Length: 472
Ligand SMILES: Cc1cc2nc3c(=O)[nH]c(=O)nc-3n(C[C@H](O)[C@H](O)[C@H](O)COP(=O)(O)O)c2cc1C
Image 1 (cartoon, rainbow, N blue to C red):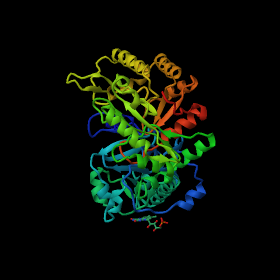
Image 2 (tube, protein in one colour):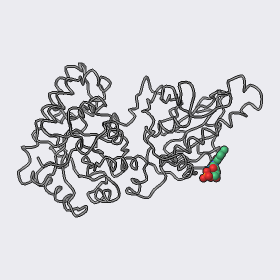
Image 3 (cartoon, protein in one colour):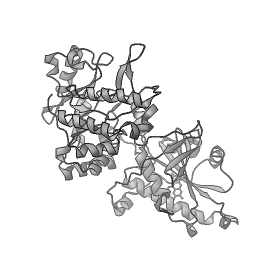
Image 4 (tube, rainbow, N blue to C red):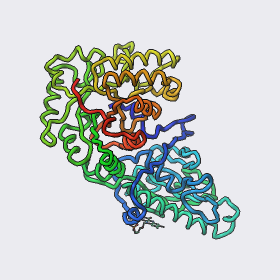
């Protein structure tokens, strides 16, 4: 898929400010959707020491940090501290470096560019496998802690934080273990800690090691909530943006349907620079997907179209094999070397407003094509994504939505993408748009579907709001 889309559209949007070494990661709001009761979380709490490599989504990272040491009142936190000294500091260690959690701003401030997970693991290498580790430190700079035993009370403070982390993980299907083991000297040095900062405990966090794709799905807390929410609303979701590539096959797609609520279509990129570049390849792809049956019916087959004359390239007989057509607006014009201009690659946009006028026309022209789904609506290149609110004016949004509604084209809500933004979605709902759901996968690994769940709940979607497959 489109690696740049992933980069700019993660749930979090990691905003990098300033020079290398001074980065700040803006966290998204914490994931607090778990319906698990405290009693159930207590029942499930345990130490797990075997982690899969699957990254923890930023919503969950934000959630576990909030549970550990976030603010639940303007000036007080989720964790109790002796004499309300609020001594605890959390360091977040990941592949990209080590960060200090700023709970007020909900950001991570980079303190070190090294991957410290090995130093953190100490003599327990399993801990280095977890994608993220939280270090629970205590700030002893308050005069209360000037005399020995200086850190006495903060042991209790740290223990409470550890308990919170355990419970959040238990409630959200995450694996963790509280550890006193760590190479404290190496960490102190790398994190440039003052003498007044004491390292108490750490928590590697990840998904429990599992043995396969299908088994991952039903275990995920988000997917459980999504299944419940859809059942309650009478919605059947279909992943219309599932690419057959990177190890994903029609057979795996079908197996996923059996294992989990989401129904699926299967598509691949069509166009001169893409895998399905002629009618023979396209027909073979459609036949291969249709040959796979789920519940006695063939898997729906689609294409993602990338050339603006795609409908003239495909002959009638091959066109008849396709169940749906998906397009995004992320290729506009050609570059000087003759290759199509892919907007997810770096762009120079000296005059964003003039560019936007052209881009908006490009959006409207795509809606003239006989497509079924507009993927990633209102996407903007990374260079100007911060100007979303001024470039995507309400007038432009309304025109685009009105055309999609008039032409029966669904607007996609994509997993792990920050486009379209909430204002657009709200307007689209008001204006009677139909929504489709997609993962836009790169490979066979599951994606974080929390954005689907949020959109369904937030927009209060019902069966009539969901696009269903109609041949165009
Ligand atoms: C203060 C503290 C320090 C711990 N340190 C380690 C450690 O360094 N390595 C480890 O594998 N487990 C560590 N544990 C986890 C305990 O071994 C674990 O909680 C205990 O075996 C009970 O298992 P349970 O958490 O599944 O109930 C620690 C637990 C606590 C409370």
